[in-house]
Length: 229
Image (cartoon, rainbow, N blue to C red; front, side, top):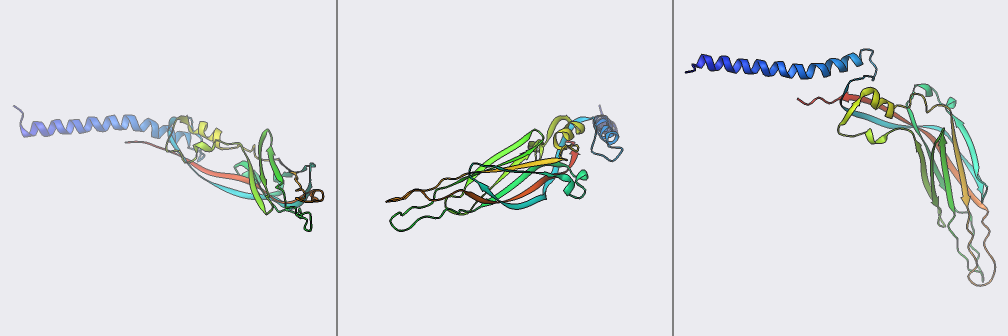
């Protein structure tokens, strides 16, 4: 028959064994993580569960206004040399914001024409990454954005990333300097001129004045281990 002292001894032994098992499981992950980050960087070869915390910011590369003729695209190239400390940024994308009005004038009198929507298309390109998008003025002011990205945005905000090391995650969210260099923007206009309702011809609509803002997309992040106890 067990005495109270025997039961206490057995309970203490179970607690000791449980603690040993916990440390045997947890310490390899911890020390692997610590070893992989001994230099203070976000690198590490240990495969475990991780979470990515980060924030996107936008750094202006250039801005301006151009008259873009119907059927004749406007294009320019902007280099990150124009941005201070660009080589220290994790540049993961290019954003181009376009805004435009309507310079087609409807005719009065017996013509009674209106205005037809023009299509304004923007293209953002860096290396072999390209984003294209279009918008319409519809007889009034219009605007839209175009982005080209070269990182795995799905990892940002994910609850847990499984089956990868910190190095593997970093390869997908850090451009490693690939965002430096030339970034190209192209703007084109497909103008549509309305016709007279009664007597007369078409309105004159040779293009549109388009304003643009070119921005680098910068991603600052941390990778943290997720250890469930």
